[in-house]
Length: 230
Image (cartoon, rainbow, N blue to C red; front, side):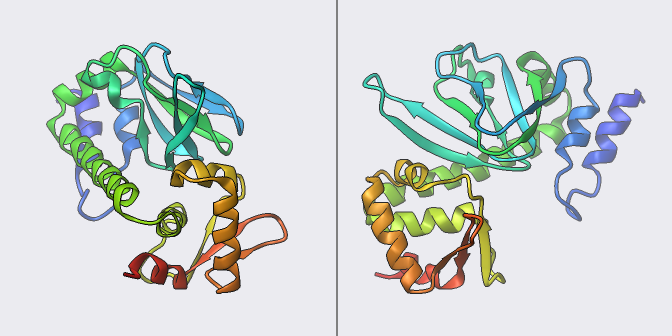
């Protein structure tokens, strides 16, 4: 059995017992991938650039945004460790339909489109894992759409804060990275910065969020009540 295949199957083995080791899977296919480092607030690619690769976040946070012909920007996703982005190139996308910017210092794996396509074609186990990953993201995006269509801006903000904090069932409080500011939140919620400021003040007074001296934001479990409220 070829060495690369052995490495790939070894990584896939035991997936039920632990998180997917995408770095190991990517490393098993060398020749068309490379590791790149970006500082905070740097452009990774821009809307309209050639769509020629897929990125995997080894460490850090990345925001995905779109800009209208009138110059209005909207943030459509905040991604972090273990997420992929730029995968539209695998579905025939020739140009990027969104822009990707680092929020924090980031370590990324850049995988050429041809290599990613070959990896998915030759390794069915990898393909299944990647499809599962994409379906999970799609469910999140569907939730975002429903949220945008039917919920108030207050509920949308509360939900986004909980998602950004990766809030778990057993958690009492989780932190949101300080580089995500109220302007970013306004773009994600689809409202004005003044409305976000109003709701954040309200959440703070109710004890749902706390601000640290460093500018960091902590989200508390009580914020769930805003999302669940009829």
